[in-house]
Image (cartoon, rainbow, N blue to C red; front, side, top):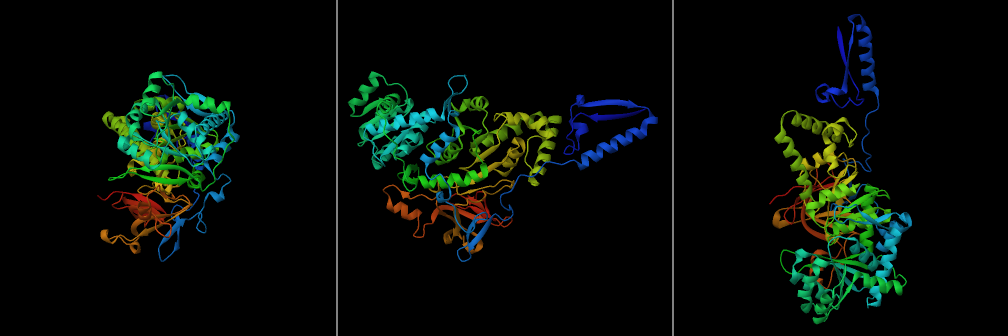
Length: 575
């Protein structure tokens, strides 16, 4: 007798060990008489021809040659630009949307009554406000601010965790040419007081937890006249602030006043300052980076060339809105008409919020992604045996596909091994982006294989609108932070004290382009340190161009050493 095992699973071309891997019930054994050997052999031969000749998975489209991602445009100073736009740096001039105001209102036209802002309380589902509803609320709130004395280019403080009112306040400021000044807890009370004094902030919009902090600092905030609380205001709270000479109103009260007497929008120009984003230094007072509407639009437009954001995208907002990483991501989502839901404010509940929202775009910092990696690898290692064997085979197989430019989540390994990993982020994430700190190459490869989607790594700083380089679709190599964005060029400046010289393709990373900030608020000395007379922003980071992929940048260390490569930046630290 002759026994043949036929698999029910059609995708075996990437599963050479399928006889040992697939569940037993995947097979249907049947018995043939030895006289039927010829028929069985023919059947197996036909099956083999099918497997060998059927189309395999296609590599991810590469917008530029991943082996040469930049072009040197100045041999003397070794200035490099993105290979997709070597002749001209892109800016907001090349985009029909030129301000944050235009970006959000383009989203209103795109999405209308579709979901815009989602809020979740308790264990219930996300409750959504539509783009049209948010558009009306921002007009009401902005009109209310104008009635309370806000004039064009006035500074408005926002001191709150991520929530819908944060965005409504920000978009109201954009509609009436007001300048947002985010505050955040880690700065400390003294620093917050310094910011309010330097920016001459008259109005602060805050969430309930920040109210007590502001009450304590209010006597030392000489310019502060009004606080707008997100949520209801008690008589006692109102009386407490009145005692220190500050008026306290609720967010709803400002909206109601504006709704009763609406004021026509006063849109900003691209060159108007949109926000003052303070960066905390290791010593001394923080510096307020002045970023224009044109800076924002230029940066997110270049990023969206790779992300292709659309109306069906869903995003979970949990990274601090006081930082530029989250701000630039959201600025790119609004024109697409995408949906943004807010976490409940407790990182311990983040996994539950992800499961409830099921995002398609997920942005994170290496710390969280490292935890995902450590948990999965730790669990598999502890289990050992067949479970670890399958995991190792799955990771090896999908890593091999990544080396061929293939990134997918419909392989047999996704069904057998990585499905649970993908479920931790909701099961439908199509893009992951990370930055703000280096991430290990082993973690990046694992995430790309396990999640089955591109994981982009970027590098930049507040002063360059968050991102200045990013890895590109189809490049799944590790150890770098990608090529310069098409909107900025990069050169490496000599650092003799550290023995780094641009002739050796090493030096301080410098940026120049339409995403570079205007300077620091009321601090010419610090501005002159950061921006030279030719418009170059000196990052303070040391980089090296990658010899394997010319034009990629590699970070050697933050303010110590950074490594750049052929078209991309590599991340490794030399302390």
